[in-house]
Image (cartoon, rainbow, N blue to C red):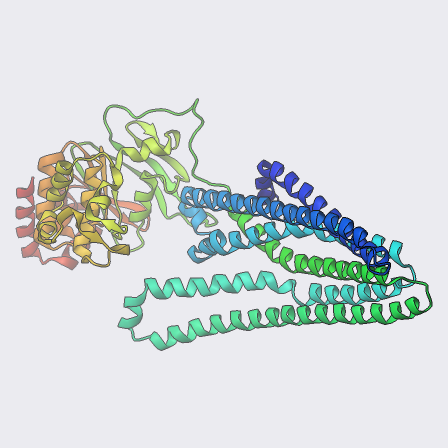
Length: 586
């Protein structure tokens, strides 16, 4: 909460204006009943029209001033809340986009979305109400009590009775409603999580015919949230008519008791009506305070959740500018005695990894599921930092490089192709906004994507749906490869990026890469033997350790694990033929 409160500091001038406007509004509204009493007692009763006109004119001016103060206060309170919410959303977005994989694992995607939308909106609403009501209600309540006692002490018991009823209602609200606000946000997170999983996994759900199960799962979470919302809103709905009943009852009591005092010549009619107005102000003030107490605990929960995101310490940070170094003229990638274990895990995913990927050569990484191939790639791009040892790019430890410089030299094609809504052209320019159309075409030709791009009615201007749902898996992967090539990086990393391609496209793409940008450092994570036959260096991983290192022929002869992988995909005879055809790629 402390973190969120710090955002209000820059808007202190706005808050001071709101406070000044509220003081003016309170003074005006407390003055009006006095003027009304004066008109009735000294004007209407005595038939003095001049006095009525004189005091009535002052009343109109005071009412206009009260309206002006109310509008000014509302305007600047709204500006403060809206600007604070805008800054919170912006900072949450920047913070989340700076998260490493370790931080992202602490929050679910659904929870982060809820925190940056629903929670921020709740803080914005609470800010507006707090600025308008938190100062206004106590001032008005205290001022109205004082003015009521000045008008008639004999009727003070009616206001005391009203306060007892209102305080009882506030205590009920505190114990019945407030504890459930935190639970409401958690249940909302749950609904968002299930909805996100259902939408992203639609094809899997349909393939396994589990629609009914998923609908039941969503219904359970939705019903839990609905029941809680209904209970809270029933309590809130009960409060409003109760407050209205208290106000009406107090009004009747004041008129009844006031009539007896007027009959006994102990109170004038105008004073009774003024007292009635002050009593209503007192009750309304406490009603506003009740609304604040309803809103603030829920906002406090939202502030805490927002603060958890903003206060999260990012594990992957840039070095101090004084320590920052630059890469050398060449861009080999070297792993030097690297070990890695995930946060809060004692088991090492990678252990004592050492190899060098040289420029102009292809270094392939292969191994069974869970052997640590993709984790190794994440260390190069610094999505994680090595627990032990060093990862070097161009002779510099990646931890000593600014992240922008490090990643400017690397073109990553992820295992799962990701495209953004827009056009083919906008997706290809994602890594280089200044790329010319010729460069886009060249990268697409190397990635073997121009064939299907030319078939599109609008070519490079063809629209891409959200998530790339209007292109096939192979087309999406080729566009992702072309996007990395447009960046023209010194290091190209393919994280099992050829698995969605057929053999002929795979072979043509690798041949085009060698012929056109052969000076780059190529690192390929692959499952298929055909993809890595021509690699100058193949790293075989097994349970996070290097089980073999060498060329295809060397590993067939010396590494049993590599031979098992090769024979699981090809026969002895096919292996010999594929090896011969793979050499032609060189």
